[in-house]
Image (cartoon, rainbow, N blue to C red; front, side):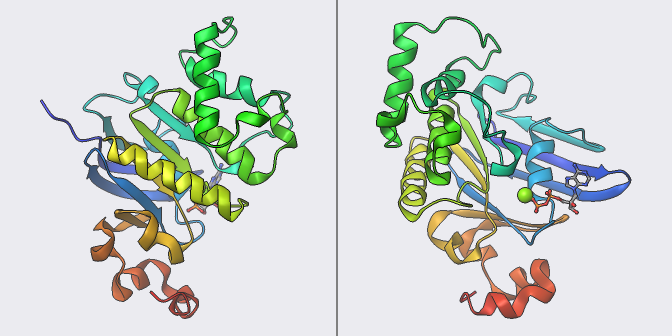
Length: 246
Ligand code: ADP
Ligand code: MG
């Protein structure tokens, strides 16, 4: 039986009684590159974390590939928002990527030669093979983000979730990352990206989830990326958006 990549029913999340995500229901088919857009504080990160069981939900049912997140954890790669990561953590680039090769929590298992070769291959794909011995804290923002993508690739996941991967990232890293995300989708993988910059939404994604606590709209970019629909989510921030050609 074919399953949706993601199926969410009536997801509610709150912090200390304040609702951050209200009653979101949607299904994503495999092979899509989906942008989650919406203003600051719209609950984009919260939505992603709650979907992945990283924070508690008040209510709601989430299925990934027809199963619970717990059952398919190994098939899910998650790259958190930059400020959620401890960049002072003393770990080399290669070791950070190697962590992706065994998400089954056997973190201290001694990596085999084949694991290292695979990790190096993933680093090569993101153009970071020359930095394998560097500490992650000594990389630029773009390089760090590429390493985290390499870790996600090393995991051989079916679904990729990235939270604001382009913040603090140079243009060339951004282009490399987008290219790889598109390739993953062509291979039938599903990629979900939180992204606050509307100006690129058109080029980067084939579907958009427009969120402002509630689900405002979900569908093909051409359906969602319309003045009246975007305005519903961004309200007062609309004058600014007009300059970006929405
Ligand atoms: P976005 O990613 O769209 O900018 P967030 O999901 O980070 O939005 O936040 C949604 C709302 O929840 C905001 O009002 C934010 O202040 C609040 N919030 C986020 N994380 C926490 C937390 N750990 N504790 C309390 N409130 C939070
Ligand atoms: Mg966020």
